Image (cartoon, rainbow, N blue to C red; front, side, top):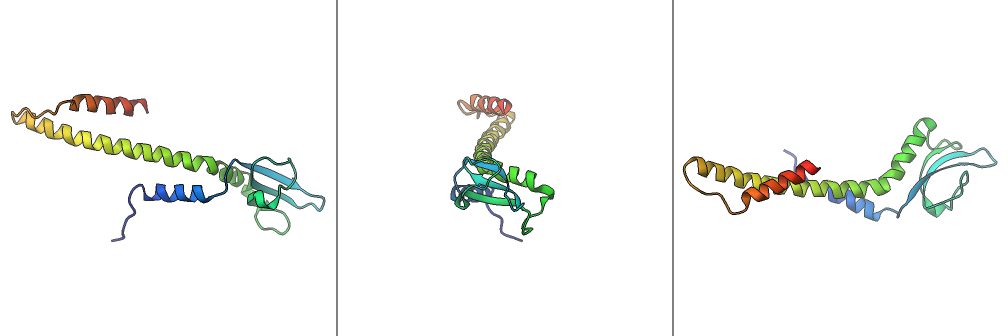
Length: 145
C-alpha cells in the first residue's frame, strides 16, 4: 500500500510552485527575425509584437524554428496554456481549498444530523440548537455554487 498525500497536499504543492514562478502577466508572443528564425514563446509583461522580449523576461519557448528545439504542431495551444496557468493555477487552488472546506463543513453537519435523526427515531429528543439552520445555510451555499 502506498502512502497517500493528504487531499489538499497537491493543492499546497501547486500553490508553492505558482508562488515561486515569475510574476505575471504572462503573454504569448511570436517572433520572426531577419534570419527567418520563427518562434512562439511565453514572456512576462508587455512586449513588442513580432519581436523577442529581453531574455530575462522569457518564461517558455514553445516553437523555435532553428534549431528545432520545439515542434510547431501544438505551439499555439501550448503557449496559451502556459500563459493561462500563471493566473489560472492560483485561482484553481483557491477554489479547491474553498470547496474542500465546504465539503468538510457539510460532512460535519451531516454527521450531526444523522446522529440527531437516529436519536429522534429512537424516541429521544437529541436535536441540537441551531443544527437545522446550519444545515439549511450549507444547503443554500451548495445550491448557490
